Length: 331
Image (tube, rainbow, N blue to C red; front, side, top):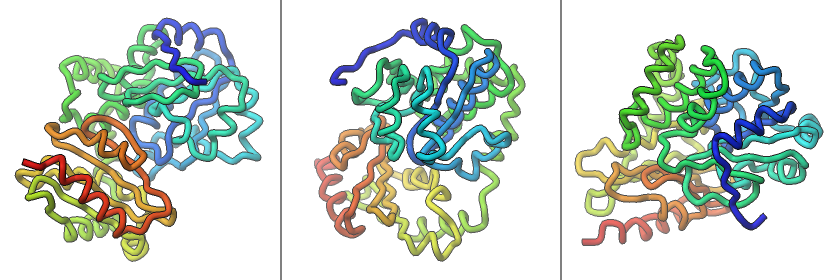
């Protein structure tokens, strides 16, 4: 496919009604919006009598494991899941718009005869699916799904919980730029459906392991002020994970601490991995980091983006990053 075919919410609702066997999937290292969106959609479809398999290339991170109490999320294994993907009537891809971000699942998704639909809010969609519902102004994929589901399915507690998790996490607990009055009104509907916002917040943000706190301490101790004080760099080496007993999922949201320095407009977290260096970009809202991420082969939003540089040495990526950051703050 070499073109993006847009679909309306009504067209996707019709497809959800018409088909019976669904596979849901999302991007690598799934976050609250990805998993919450899958969780809400899966419960809506199952409530309508559909057969639903949620298959992701990476496991559920510990702080979101409460969404997986009933074993909804399956980690992709070709031998176990390729037949399910091939036999689906419809594949719904949420919170991503580039097939490469399903990593090892990409071949199975592309090879399936199922109708493939993308529901997402990121920039620069890449053609691989049969249809796309993309709203780049939405605060989260979960906001798009709220509109899609609320008009067609009874709002259960499970659906509301998934949507709330997606919206809360992708808005930085309702503080980021796209947290509009309407987003708060949606949150109110979800609370009225029974979501316990205090419990959800605690499970996601206030129940970290001791190792995560030790890892955060190391990252903050190594904070580097660059570009004349306009940006910060944070770093995590593989040895930091080993010595604190943590894994990459324990680094979730650590990048945001880099914006906590007065006068800083952008921050980047560099995480050393066995296959290269992962980059997480964040901006306070005056400097776009989207094109910066694209220059490293990634993408995302204007003020929150990411990339992975494969097969590169950590210090080489850091040096290249400094060169790329400098023009953003040239006077």
